[in-house]
Amino acid sequence: MKETQQPGQETWRTLLRSIYFSFPTGKRQEFLDAVGVSRVSLERWIKGEANPHTSKLQTLLLAIPRLHRGRFLRLLREEFPGFLPLSDEGAGDVEKPEMSVPSLFYEEILRTHWDTAPGSGFKLICTSLLHTCLTQLDPVRLGMEIVVVQCMPPRLDQRVRSLRQRLSLGTPPWHTYLQEKVRLFGLESLAGYVVSSGRSFSESRDQCTFVQLNDHPEVIESLFAAPLRRADHIAGCLLFFSTQPDHFSQERRELIERYLPLFNLAFRESDFSPPSQIALSVMPPPAQQEVVARTIHSRTAEKMLQAARSGRPISYAQAEELAWGDVEQVLLGDDPGTAIQESPERQEVAG
Image (cartoon, rainbow, N blue to C red; front, side, top):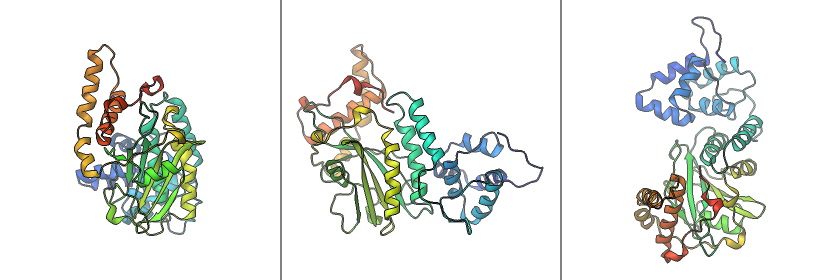
């Protein structure tokens, strides 16, 4: 819906335009990454050709420099009188709302789940959830990272031997744009413990004895992890790292628990394994993993080429899953006979 305004009248859109175009070119991309939108989408907001979703209003407000944030919020409320920031940062005396999943956002995720083909909405759903969840858990951007970890497909012996990092998003010092790290976790890791036990875990850095595969382990002061499961079947877990001591209060842990069923919607039914199939191995250290992991793209291309030559072409996602199986096999030192099992359901395209 296009806004109506008097010539010369300041609105949140005109202020957004002034702020955005005052940034150097490189800073503009950082701003877009922080909001979680493309340049085209932002320019449509500025022109009044589209309105941000409520969850994007939250990230937009927090991406605005603090000097302008109070003024920007007042202008936002002129067009969106019901808008309530999830943080009191720059919001004056606004009452801080209860920490819960916004109902409209809940509907948005459910609609995305039902409107996408099975297995094709993983990245789309997780990206929206990561942005919104991060906004609520670290509203003033003190430093947090959320990591989505998924069980590798069972081998031919029907055992899940390792976990794969799929996506991550954070606030500084972590990357503020979506990351897809080539990294595997095993029994030695916090992710491995949570998936094997099926229980959540909250601890300070000093008290946590698990190996932390993280880009900034030196700044982590508190952490939390929760399994992603349907009944007793597990697909992986979420990892939360914060630069603040004792950050994961009871209130924040309860908020995370409310998000878990929505993250589950990103996974296929076949991604969930019963506890009897979880038999994680100890994975090599990061340096050794990195040498093998660098081959993931060439291995994926080779899988696609082999499939095409055999007259049975496969998608990039299918080829990548097979390539990950090869990487896991090399890191575990397994025989070729224990390769990933290719069930018909797992041949669906993964998002």
